[in-house]
Length: 289
Image (cartoon, rainbow, N blue to C red; front, side, top):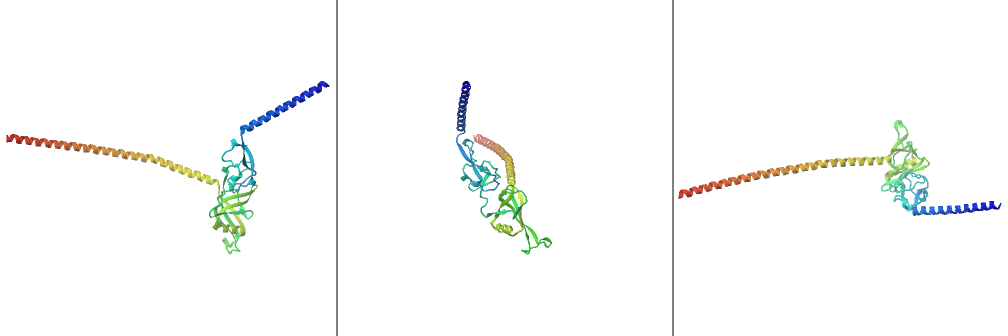
């Protein structure tokens, strides 16, 4: 009995010692790991799904710490950096917020105003995202205005505005609840009248925000091709200039040769004239003697 108790006590003491060693080793490992990672920095993370075109505020964000050595310049570290910012693309829950997915809320400026078109007063035929282009149509009963449609029909549908820019989109789940469109101040009155008094206002998607990137790539391609054409024309113009220079040099050389020949002929003529004069003088002297 005594031996068994002694053996149990030894095993229990050994387990305690091994447990203490394991705790010490684990804590040492954690300290070394934290030391290797360095200082931690707080970054902003999406607390929920954020649709494109949403104004960013503190309720949509949460803090998360990451090692400083993994921090990039594009990461948002303080909520002050998000003042007056709007999401450019949809941001999923848990995604780290970066400057590349945000823009300044500066679309509404100058003579433009944002008008919110909310369901069910407005109808959205298909998926519409921020920065898309839409046409605004409205239907109304002409009994109140005295207008008449085709065949005397008093129900009229008209095009209100074309290619209007979508500035923001609000959703509940996958359903669109409101869309903010940018219109000129002079057109906002007509849009608000349609929302208040028309039977239905419908938004038709006329262009995608992806088209902007395609147009940019096409314009850059055209620019590069024109630059290559100019580059190909430059050697030709240089060669033409060199040919002109060579022709001018050849002409100058031929002119110089002609002048030299004429000068030598003139010298020869002068020398012949002097010899004839000397002979005549010698003949006169002999005859006088």
